[in-house]
Length: 194
Image 1 (cartoon, helix red, strand yellow):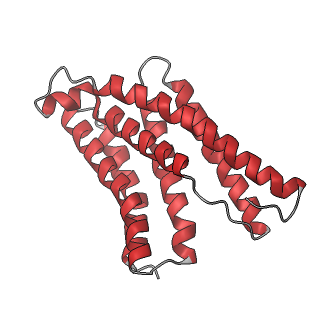
Image 2 (cartoon, rainbow, N blue to C red):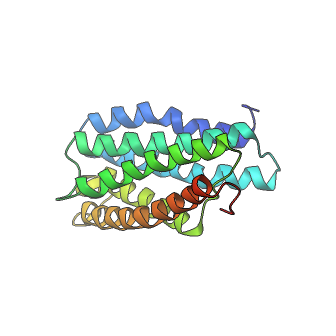
Image 3 (cartoon, helix red, strand yellow):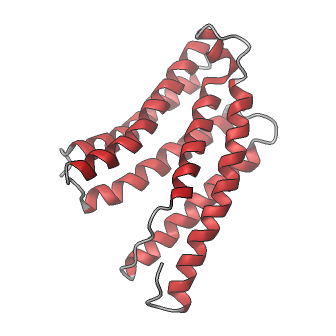
């Protein structure tokens, strides 16, 4: 199962993290551009692995377990890099905290519900949250100096990333609340529909 293409793509997101850390730590505009490109490719694999798994009928328990772990590791590591290297715009720490807290909450909730054999399906709004989050992190990794390397000096990559990060945080609160309510229904009324 580890050699199935969807699982290889999922594992590639985890494998990309050390290289992402190295690129961001270099604090160089070219490295910022490469970090943003690597993160974008990793984000695309998130969409691609699920699509391939469904079309090739290569859905597996391993893939269902690894996919959210890879996503959370990639997003968590990237948020920590952005905070640690002071790459967030003003007040950007607040949506970053909201996103991290929601990821921990939903992970714990999913683990509990899995223990009682209840799945928590991903909603369309959660997919929009993920898209906004991935876009935000990609723009923030690129930064204004990375954008200048592309020949688009003056492109407000950091500002766009900041706005998308706040949008992702708002969607994070809404979807986190939805998941929490669905989970609480199973705790309060075992056997309730998700």
